[in-house]
Structure formats: structure tokens, C-alpha cells
Length: 257
Image (cartoon, rainbow, N blue to C red; front, top):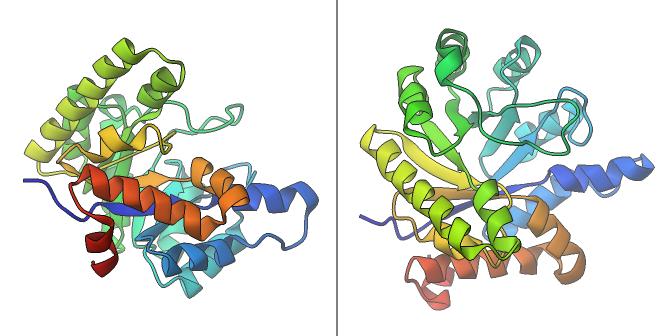
């Protein structure tokens, strides 16, 4: 059965990217988080990378202390990040692959080949009170492994689908979308909560939002970029409206909800 209210988590990393280009305190990622909360965002995502290229340790501390929405802490599965997560105990921790040379997270986490190590990290994070999500491909082998290591949630990597659609390769995009649909069904059948994200735009979100098992989308770079032109509140509201349409809700129903 389709969940009518599809949650939207907004990743604020690239507000920090703009801030760090000049140094100082402006623009403030926490202020961006407050705007998202005020205009209907359901949660805030922030990725504390090893190289601290955007979000900083201080940002995480302030977000945890000041947010009125759940914080989803994206992190590599390292001892350093585990210690930080255990110190702050965010609402959720999303384990993602991370390579220093990449521009952004590329591909899903390899869970099947690292079951023992990941089970240990997942167990500690869950014991601290955080829900644990794994950012993975819609591959039954990886989904089964996510269940085996004790994750609460899987976030399906939508980047390949979005890239294909943006390149105009609709046939390959449809094949990738079918994989996402099958993966969502498989994950839900395992008892995992299903999220999706990476590369989603106004033009690519609707088909993903229509997948009935998906209960949350996490979108960042595109919304921060649109916010430069529209204002962040309007950019988020427009995304929410498209997501609502995908679930068969009117804009009026969305506002009342």
C-alpha cells in the first residue's frame, strides 16, 4: 500500500560549500535547516566527510542542538565517524561510501563483502538510539546483506537513473527505474524501510516518488542550487508539490497535511 505522505529530507551540505569558498560564517547551514523546517521539510541531512570539504564538526554540533526536525548524519563507516556519531546520537545515521578524490558520493556502499565490520558499527549506532540507514544500490545481494547486518533502512542510490534521464537516454533510464522499483519491493519484503536519493531534480523525482514502498526522499544539491534563483523555501515547496502529485495528492491536501 502506498504511503500518502512521502517525507522529504533536505541535504544542506552545499550551503556549507558556498560558505567555505570565502571562509567566515555566511551562508549558515543551520539557518538553511531552519528555512527547510519552516517550509515543510521533514528532516535535514548533513554529510561530515573525512576531509571536511563542506560540513564541519561545529555544524553537526549546532544542528543537533538547534534543529526542530530529525538530523540524518551521513558518514563513512570509519572509527572517527563512529565516535562522532556516538557522541551526538543523531536521529539517524546513514552509512555511505566515501573516497577522498570523488566530487560527491559515487555508487552505493559495498555491504555484502563487509558484513562483519558493518554489523559491528550498525549495532553500536542502534544501541546509542540512532536509526541506521545504508546507502546502497538496488541489488538484491546488497539488500539482503543490509538486512543481515541489522540496518533499519536502506536508501536506494538514484544517481544512475537521474544521469541517464538527464542525458536523454530514456530507454536505459526506464531499465534503471525498473531496477529501483524491484529493489524497493525486495527491501520492503525484508522488513527494511525504503528511502531513495542522489541526483534527483524536478524532472526526475516524480517516477521515483511514485514507487509505493519508498517513504522518504533525500535531496540536496539540486534544491540548494534552485534556492539561489527561487529562494530555498520556494524550491522546497515546489519539490514537495511534485512529490505529492506523484502520490496522487493535491497541493491543497499537502498544505493541510
